[in-house]
Image (tube, rainbow, N blue to C red; front, top):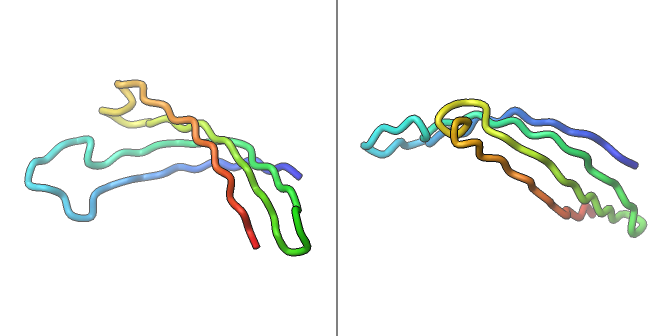
Length: 75
């Protein structure tokens, strides 16, 4: 019980402060596996890990990367 997911994310401010900055909007890409464990009749544990990186400037030049671990329960 394994799945692989990817995400292309655009993030931007809904209300931009008066100072303009190119970092107010950015685009990132993430990919990673997720495991599925049934731990009860209607309960699932779905741990996952993903690697994410920014693909536009200025954050791509800074070489920021994110490793995210999450442990969601579904019931």
